[in-house]
Picture (cartoon, helix red, strand yellow):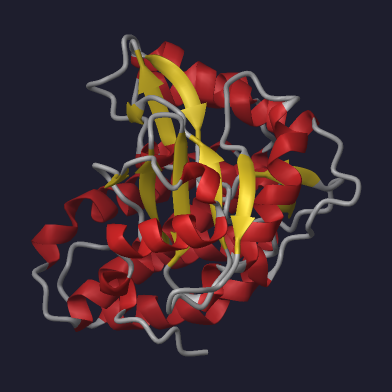
Length: 309
């Protein structure tokens, strides 16, 4: 489906103003300003001081609009910090072909360990958020699948892509132990999930955790949320935390060995495909230091688990 727009560049503040004026005239006098740090799946604009406008950048991200409008109020009631709530859904118009949403604005800045007051306490706050999310009744919730980009579904969906990335990197001198990484992937696939369905966020990353006064203030971007295997939400153990903060997160979130094996698979998959894509684009391997560190960490952790078995 072609959007008729020039990718992300086709969405701008002028378009947002036209859409709001045409469909929600009660808010047409509010200023529209781009957010300081924007995402890729959606473009977000402030609408006055209390609202925001969120527009998918591609048809693949469209299912999140109705899903979040329906389910975020349900989830919000059981969570320890605020999450976005949609107050209206806009329709295609003004040359823009997708549904879009107006939401309440949540204050805070994207997290990084330098911005939090105490990293181990912050890690515990994130773990408590995930535990609260998993306790919410999953009945009727959207089962993991295409709408969640298969977060919460079996890792086997990404087996071919992961193996292709391993093959690409096997021919490059990048300091990645391909054999050990392959063993991590095999262990993740073998640790099949047979538990009851649980709510998952699907993209628990530093940019989706908002911090205010050094504490977790809100969690945003539930576009990949759904009901299924919550192991995908554990990846932040490696993408943000390390040392004492990682240990605090692990202890508080208290997941079983199989969940951690699958979580290592999720974070390995993303790191591998990112590095492989960069290498094929001709980027120096050195620019992928963070992803190489993640791979080294999960490889070492898997080896430690094997030694203790």
